[in-house]
Length: 461
Image 1 (cartoon, rainbow, N blue to C red):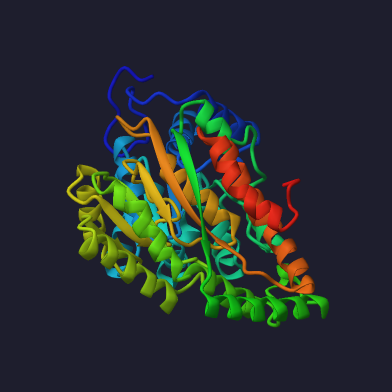
Image 2: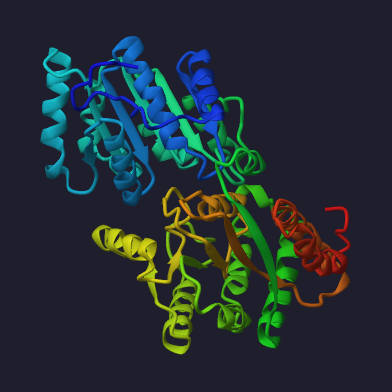
């Protein structure tokens, strides 16, 4: 540790911040793999601080000159800026209007290269990374630049991967789920660029055991489809079966199969009986606070479907108007300044709950969340993992979290369609069972899932 305070702008972890054992091991592992690697650590376990510890150590060891952090969303830029501020770093926030950051970045780059400034940091978004304004500056970053990909699985898409600078060799990827869902090529591209997954990986069980995440209660809520929904579901499942029998592949974004799976996911996500289940869950819990309500199945990665929007509006109406529970909505359309206000109101208890679609899945740090009601989930395991970690982040006075997870019961199907459903359900059920097993009320949670396992002969899951 330095006895003299470092000048502002130099990366340095505050003395009050003590890294956990696994974070120190991650730092050592990255250096041992010669300045490349991907940290696969449970959501909420401190990847950002671990990354800034690596940057601080690099500054001490080799006089690191620059740091580039790439985030998938704007709200994560603000979050990284807060953490950088704790670590003595004053970053340039490069996103949206190029006029607000391009001159500042060009000036600081010149000063670093000329030796007039020891260090610069820039935090940007995936979208800005691809822009001409940012790409034109990348070649001028010095060799001693660390590039960090946050929620790095997003950078595996072809267009984003092409935008990554090849002349910068110090690379660090961060994600609880670096593997891309049904995209081996994209996963390979991420790990080839940033480096393979470093040991030790930190699982959810590890993080809870080490006190990085809190313990929890898990309540699966089994919801039936209405008659008309059941009919539509059966028809879609039959068509999915035909597509698979004709050679359509789940992993290939097959045009014969993917639209059917998305249609069915939207139907399940917006199932009408979930709203009745929501009333039953919340009626006896109107005195609680710090509750997050997840709407939208996230099956449409780039947009919010009409069904998700309807569910969001209905959920907010039932909670606010009918039950008098103090809530507000939090979506991709919510302006950044307003998001910060909502976050503060939520943490203080002024708002009892937030009703959200998807934009709270990745990276958003609201550790005050004590309860969550998941009305809809996609079949993408990444979303499930991200949401778990979001809810289990530790916070002063937070000893345990409570999670209600709505699971739609498939309707009665004919034998052939039943077999298709069974194969599709197997992986999803495995996630629910794993999460139930780690809960403080594991026995109770497993009994609830048993009905579904029995119905589909999946007792071995």
